Image (cartoon, rainbow, N blue to C red; front, side, top):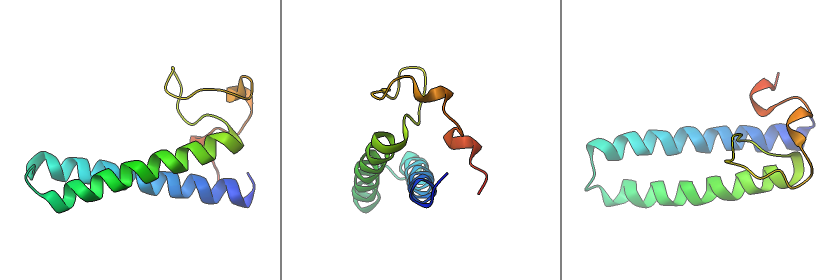
Length: 85
């Protein structure tokens, strides 16, 4: 993996963690408008980063959740979860 790919993947993982954390918080605090605003902002940023990553390095989700616009890229390694940094 090159430096740009590692940086995008790390950002993607951090945003995924934040979205999950906010999701869990909202499950117990559904009226918290600040958390809802933060969640929606993070989800948008996550989609943007995922789109940027996939445009350059291929899909991040399988089983129909990510398009493979550059041919079947799943056989190109390493896969996002196999990054050894």
